[in-house]
Amino acid sequence: MIKQDISTFYTSLENLQSSQHFLKKCYATISGIDHDAKSYENSGAFLYYLNQGQLFLSEGEKTDVRLKPLLYFYGMVHIIKACLLTNRPDYPESTSILAHGVSARKRKKKDYSFIHDEVKVQQNGLFTYTCNHLFSLNNPPFTKVKMDFLLSLIPEMNALHTHHHGKANSISVGALDSTKLSFPISILDSYHLTERAFLQRISGYLPGIKKTETTKEHILVELDKPISSLNGPFYCHSRERAIYFPSNRTYFVTIPEILVHYLLLYNLSMISRYETEYWGELFATKYSVDYSVIVHYLTIAMDKVEWLLGEWLLSRM
Image (tube, rainbow, N blue to C red; front, side):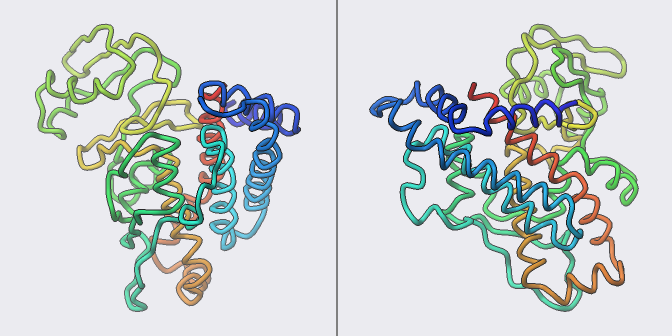
């Protein structure tokens, strides 16, 4: 199971000696620093970020659903900071990167809907800093984005989208760790592309295409090796151990999934803290589709955050 594998990896880092050894390995590729001294200096902070992050996540899993967003968001943020320490030995370099780096718009009390709400990405702060230093993204793919768009990128939300809208926003195209992908031929109509143009478009996000084959119903792609980094447009359904791809070009974006969770959990944590009337009424009356969407998302958020960040750390080995 993915969760067990990642949990074991986290456990292996739960002591100062292992944390220092891990950081020293990470710092080996960074010039201009004393690897021994810097790994020793940062091992405590790294360990405490991990421990605090996992504590927030585990307590969030046990608590009332109305409190989960706050605990999940700060759990994620702490583990992100641990990740940043692996390739930014002097993090935080300035106070400007300590802010969340995202803002929520002022809400109208009448007819407010979470799924139609949006957040804006700021120039400075942890979000942009994470984009840059964990994923080499100089700029996020958007400056503002709606919640329903972000939710549509997450494979585990597919079943709910199908119930509400009669269709899924992404499709399974292969198994995790497999070298074979299969796309329905109908996807060409959704993307308004020829087969050749479609393959050219996705090739930059794949480790190398060994060969392709087309049948009446599918485009079959064999890769040189399994996809090792799922940063969009390919995402992973952790429970199915399957790779998902957007079924419509609207959702073809290259943002890493952990950043999707950052934006969703940030907004939910802000709502749970400051929009008391909306939040209380939503859970008391269950009057809108917002309730089903939020509750379902919160059932998968913790496992996904822990797994995605654990995978990123594991890739540093």
